[in-house]
Structures are given as C-alpha cells and as structure tokens.
Length: 254
Image (cartoon, rainbow, N blue to C red; front, side, top):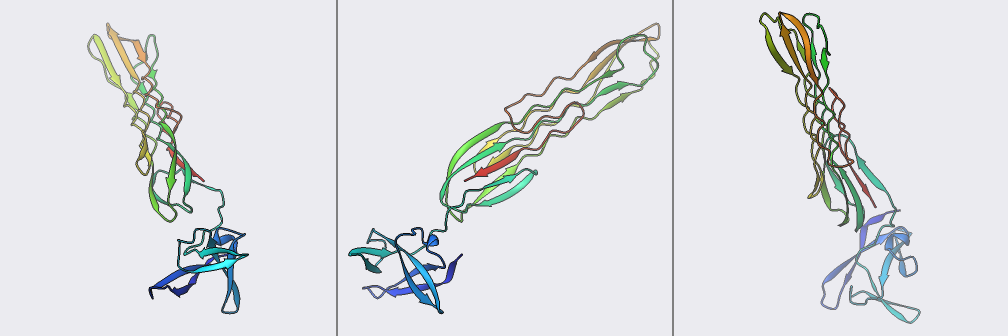
C-alpha cells in the first residue's frame, strides 16, 4: 500500500493545473465508500472523493450525487506508540494529524555518598553514615494535537549522578570534635516534549560522621544519614545511597 509519486494533473476552468494524489488502495484515500478509480501504467489506482464540492475543481458524479476529487489521500490510521527511554535528544515525526497522549518523566536524583571512618578503632558508635535517596522525577501527562509529518523535539533527562563517597582516615592528635561528610547526589535531568517539561528529582544528601576524641580515644559521636532528595512525582526513580538515579522517559501514544 502506498500513496504514489505519480499524480493526476487536471486543468481547471481558469487553465490552472490542479494536482491529485493517487493511491494503490481505497483505504488510503480516506474513504472506502466514496472513491474513483483509473488506470495508471496498467494498474488500478484510487483517488478520494468528498461531498464538499468546493475542495477542488475536479468534479465527478456517482449515483446522481456530485463529488469533488480530493487533492490528498489519507493513509489508514493505525494505533501505535513510541517510547524514548535513553537519556538524549530526539525528534518525533507525527504519522497522523490527531490527538496524541504524551507521558513525560523527569530523571531521578542521584543518591548521596557514604562517609566511612577508616582510622583507629572506635570505642562506640557507627563507623559509616549512608547517603540519602534521590528524589523521583516529575511525571506529566498531556494530550496534544499534532500535525502529520511535522517534527517535534523530545528530550529524555538523565538520572542524577550519585554523590562521591568519602573515606575518612584522619590521624587525630588532639582532644576535640571532628566532622566529615560525603558528597550529595546530583539532580536528575529535565525531560520534555515540544514545550512541555518534567523536572528531575533532587539528589540525596551525603552521609556525615562526627567523631569525638576524648583523651585521644575515639568515640563515634554521631552518624547522620543524608537527607532524601525532594521527589516531584512518579518519574525516574531516585538512586539509593551512592547510586545514580534512573533516567526519565517520554512515551507518545496515538
């Protein structure tokens, strides 16, 4: 099945040429009940008819009713979908002029890094503080009217990178309180379709340790888990401590 490169060319009453698409099947004319046929290169081809006789100057009569031959055919509508799940920038070409449902998910935030004490043995307390979980990206669902053969920009946001771990091996030589922390995760990337966006989740905070040195004996004063990153919806999943967030996605359904 195909809309042919060859066309019908007709001179109207003003001696102006009008061009008409022809197809290899009646379905591609957009109306399987009202169409005309002709022979091209020994093959039967089809052109669509419209009861609106103002759409062209090429008029035909069928069963006593006047029809105008349509300039363009309409390919048969086939439902489908297209999904983009790998971070990057793409273009989507609409196969039909129709309403499309579009789901846009931002990338998940990266998890915070882990802070670990690797110095002398602690008398008490924990020697590790874990990072917080990254937040989920936003999830937006829209219905958009797209035009056949028009291209639209698609962006899939990357998952946020995890925060860097921190291995703490300080030689403590004085009585006092000492602190260190790991890095925070990065925010997930923003996804978009055309002008609609879904932001990424925020990164989790890095874990933090505080060591209290008393008479140069080491006590685990506090192990603080990093704060969880802010979630904006059910988009890309935030990474657990010290892991990257998941990328977002864009799904287009028609």
